[in-house]
Amino acid sequence: MKINFARYRKFILLLSTLSVGILYLFYNALKPTKILPIYQPAEVSYELVDSTLQHVKKFHKIANFRLTNQNGNIITQRDYQGKIYVADFFFTTCPSICPIMTDNMGFIQSHILEDPNVKLLSFSVTPKIDSVAQLKKYALEKGVNDKKWNLLTGDKKEIYTLARKSYFVVKEDGNGGPHDMIHTENFVLVDPDKRIRGYYDGTDSTAMQDLLEDINTLKEEYDF
Image 1: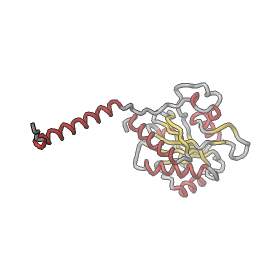
Image 2: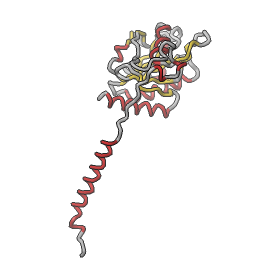
Image 3: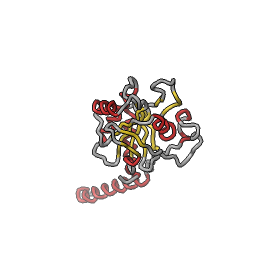
Image 4: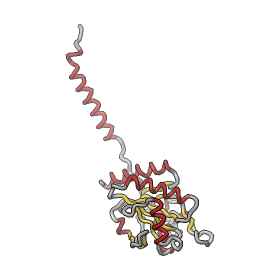
């Protein structure tokens, strides 16, 4: 018996569309939701963590700080309260990795300019050299947007303590010279609860794409 498929074409198309829709819903329901890890001191390379914290396995949060930005304004943890932010440590006279890191932070800035929930933060490891005037000059040269990105200077001990006991991005004291904080190339992703959620090679463009994806993952987690 000959079947007239034309007669049932609309029904077949409707059934096919429904089937695809159902399969898509099942896929999304079964696909695991990406959740970023929460980094604890014991999970980070010991050479980057102060000896008093190397055993800590839970409850780590970024400490409060009070430093000065490129405009001479006091910046504290309150300026980042409830925000996702990316932090790094640098110095303006660095001839090696810092210019690449700053360019990559600028790349991140270009993607978050219109996002009120994401900010950037850079700490100078040579605060005596990096005065407010020097940071302002550097900020203008590098296209830093003051509303999104603070370059901080201030008490060297406070900055070093933050690097060793909060962000875990510098090694032990260096040679005693002006650059004795041996900082890494790492960018640190911090969530609105002041917890570390990721480390990224600030000299690697591929890592910047990973960082942008993880920022979006955090935004979903916090319903931003």
